[in-house]
Image 1 (cartoon, rainbow, N blue to C red):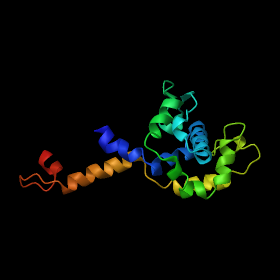
Image 2 (cartoon, rainbow, N blue to C red):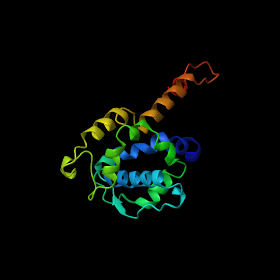
Image 3 (spheres, rainbow, N blue to C red):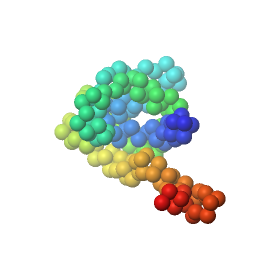
Image 4 (cartoon, rainbow, N blue to C red):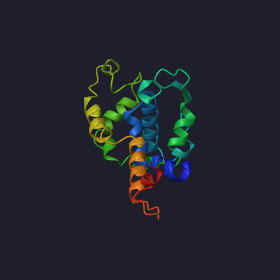
Length: 169
């Protein structure tokens, strides 16, 4: 069920690109993958860097110190059906490509939401782009809740109840 209904909607080029507006380490790794894809036609042999990454509160982990991911496995999964050449055509990349590439090749990891990591480079255009293009999209949970509510509204019970929930009352 997950593979058919959730994964196919999450593992799309349009969604995978949103990683660049999230965790700084994953963003850098994804951007580096895109740089390699632009420079080489053989991106299939690309190996993502391995790092054990502890996800913070921004990923809903609250204070759970056990939420650690393997960056290689994570990015291999998230990009498994993605086409980097198509992602490179996305306006999110095209509009500020030089600045994205500068972020990918920075000496230290750049966190778009922490100006102290910018090392004198003005990444405000990227922050604004992320807010305008990614920040507006509802989180997945909201989408699922909307689908469940619509299913309840349009479903018929054939027992003289307008909605499934009416029958349960």
